[in-house]
Length: 415
Image (cartoon, rainbow, N blue to C red; front, side, top):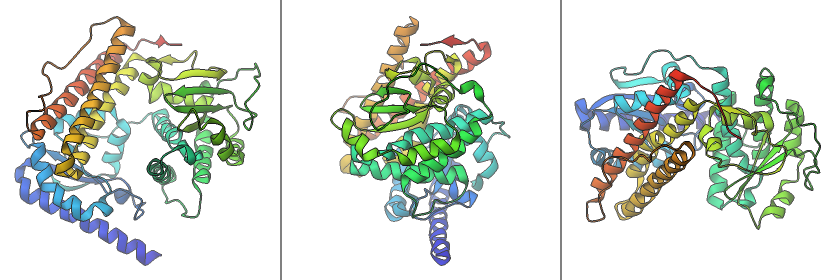
């Protein structure tokens, strides 16, 4: 096993060297810096499951089409090892992204390895412990879809299992045992998170009014709906009790009962849900994306800082700009680029719709970028550049609103 791991890490290192060489040769001074980060830089890389995480900081004048032309052949050769294309950012877009994502900023400062160019990362970043816990809680809730894989497509179930293993690696700083089923990994992560949350009783929610729980879930406290997913909320149990509860539920039977209406089940506790909404998904709560369907309502009285709402809103287009768009552009064949543009345009429309909803709630004017996306008669590369410009505009818009709101620091309550 040790030999296999060493060979696999060697393959990953060779892949990094190939990307470093081609970017350095083809971009020249246009490559400002190249960093390695993630599991390969922290010693928990797991071949076949871990991504090879790279960050390329490029000059403002470098075109996305040039990046695609340079990296697509490398991707075609090394995709099974890379698993994810490098993040592509300018110094400006990176600094803004790191302001929105302090945990990533801290990780890059602590574990990032400069491979090429000059060090352009900001200085040390102080992390609020709750910021870190809330990130893991959010990932745990999202990957808890693994409790009911029968409700997911085969591709989605595979992706969720992979993300759950990644969560376990990140949280415990060690690879998961290949023999452990997903439900055991989730229970283990939940036990650790709930142990940490014991130091923050302000997030606990105790509604003494007992409700008749659904069959198979006799201690359930609340149910929320988000689209075609169910969010099941358990009481704030002792860490060991919650871990035992997760593994003891007959999840296939629960999935069968809801299969006609829902395409996914997520599980959490009241404290975790409240923490996530306050720190990580504030816009989701503020825009009332969660529908309270049954039981107690631990979200009824939580306070959301406006700057957190804007932070959440800014993170999405920033992630699309630095990660989703470059990965898709580098890995998509020419024949499928029109569909890629269609998908990215739909994501922009979703950002616009959220803005319209936010404006309706707050009674402010609808905001749009000052320039439209070119029509279908324009080259696809021009349209992709325009989409990137729109993502940059939305990120800057919400980032500025976040910084302005953070200076004021008022509290608003949304029920």
